[in-house]
Image 1 (cartoon, rainbow, N blue to C red):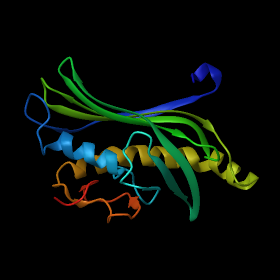
Image 2: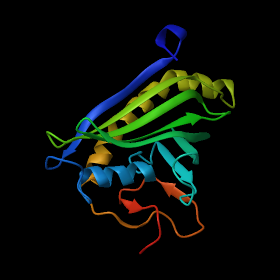
Image 3: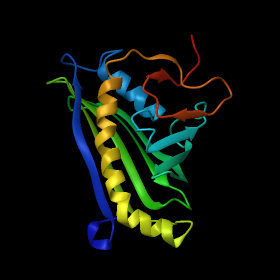
Amino acid sequence: MTRENGWIIDGTDVEIGTEPEGPPLVDGPFARARQALINYDFSDPTIVTAHFDPAVPLAGRNMLLEIKVLGLRFLCGVRVHSVRDEQEHGTSLFAFRYDTLQGHMERGFEWFLLTKDHLTGGVHFRIEAHWQMGNFPSWWSQLGFRLIGERFREVWRRRAPERLRRLTRQQVTAPVAKPDHLAHRGDERPQRTGPVP
């Protein structure tokens, strides 16, 4: 999936907060951003809302992304392929990757990576996507994506770290969805994926 083989590789890398030196705090910016990634709340819901079963573990989770462009809505499936949660060489990392499923308007995968540097305390959020044009329901929707799709991708990528930065300043509260209900995410309030203790 290289540029030489016709794949588009793009993304962003932004510092979203700082903590004291050392491993992440139990309820600090890294922990809150981690929960927002699991919930898919970093996504601007005016562009992409995620629908999923919060009872299913993140690894292997299927999500239906509702992509909204100029009043049109496209439903595109993805599956979480990999989850990383590790500490090494003075850095904490939490990340997940999802792959597009058949019928998605794009083909490829996207990584969402959260890191904390234990020496500086800096918390970074990075998005890395490898994609190509996928399937569209009509020729005019494909043409529309070619004309304005990249603009919406750029706006979404710019807003994601801004939203995540805001979410790191709020306390994680209620569960992401009622028991036995689907989650419809893109919320401005960080919430747990599990039941209330």
